[in-house]
Image (cartoon, rainbow, N blue to C red):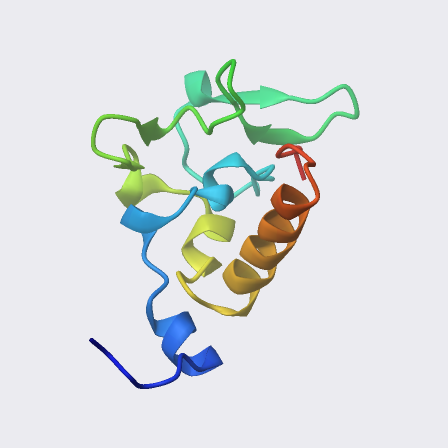
Length: 110
């Protein structure tokens, strides 16, 4: 049995996409003009924003659900390239999600 206390640093190192609720794959992904995402994977919002499309469950349509990975990884949007697993934004989004779950609030679209 591990008798070492769990610290924030230890917990952060344990963040892994394969053990996550993949909150990042359900965030709104705003596309930039330089992004080279296939057009059939995108949509325009009522506000005129060009974004990654989502499936009926709110997941980014580029997510390969069988392998839980990005099907367009080499062409992924710039904002996805900046989203670092276990980085500050990842941890913040996970904290918000876990706080909402603890209070009985379902996942909402950010």
